[in-house]
Length: 383
Image (cartoon, rainbow, N blue to C red):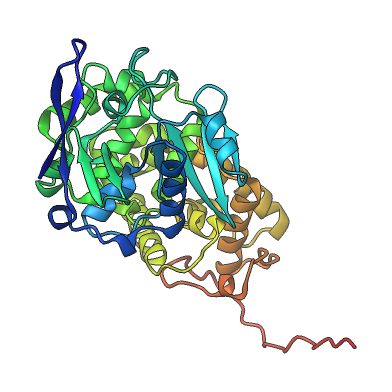
C-alpha cells in the first residue's frame, strides 16, 4: 500500500490518503469503460489530472457493473469543452461538462473547494474535493492509468465492513442538502451497508427538511429508485426512516390506512424489481405501471364509458404520484396499459417496440376481460 502526501500551509509534507494498488483493490481494467479511459488519457496528455470517481469506484469494489462512469479533473469546464469537441457545458451555478460518445454521456466535473461549504461552486483541489463527498464509500478516486484507488477517508475499509459513514459532519450534511438522506438509504440498500444508529437518528430527525425540496429534484430521486432494481427494499427503508411520506405522500397515507393496500403496493414493487433485473430495455411508462396499479384497482369504474374512465383515472394518478412529475406521455402510457389489461375497452398505449406488448405476471388483475379472436394484420408491400 502506498501513501499520498500533500503540503500543508507551511509547506510540510502531510499524509493525506492511502493508495491501493491493483493487487490490493482487485479492480479489473477490462471492467472500466474504454471511453472513460480515453477521456482520462486525453486529459493526462494535456497536463491535467483525471480520475473515475464516486459510485463507479464503489460498485467496482463490490463486484457490480457500474451504470455510469463519472470523471473528476482539475481542468475547468471551459478548458474541458475546448479539449473535447463532442461535449457541452451544463448547469448555471454548478457547472459540469457532458462528453458524448454516441448516445452515451460521461459527466466530467472539476475539483471543488469547501471555502463556501459543501454546496459552493468554487473550484479547488483534489484534497478539498473529497471533503465535499457525502459518504466515504462514494469518496474514492480511481486512476485507470496507474490502476490505483486513492482513498482519503477510509472508504475502502468501510465498503469491506459494509458500513455507511458520512464524510461531512452530521451537524451540516442534511441541512446543506436534504436529498442526501435519500441517497443514504439508496446506498445502504444497493451496497448492503448498515446505517449506524447515530446516522439513522439524524436522518429521522432531519426528514422534514425534504418538505421544501423542489419537485424536479424529488422526481429525479424517485425515478432512480423506480429504476434501481431495489425499489422494494429501498421503499421499506424509506418508510423506516420517515422519508417516504415526502416522496409519495398519497401512497404513504394509503399504506398507513390499509394493510391490504400496503401488501399490494409492496408486491407491486417486488414485481417491478423483477422486471428491472431482467436487464431488458423498458420505458419509464411501463415501470410507472407498478406505482399506480393498486390505486387504479380501487378507483376504476370498470363498467363506465372508457374515455370518461380514462380521464378520471389519469387525473387521480397524476395527483397520486405528486410531487413526482413524470413526463405526461409516460404516465398516460401507464394508465392506458393498466386499464387495457384490466379489461376496459380502451385503445392500447403506444409501444416503442414489440417487447412492450408482453405482459408480466402479477401486474393487473383481469376484470371480466372479453377475449377477442386474433386476426393477422394485413401485410403491406412496396416496390
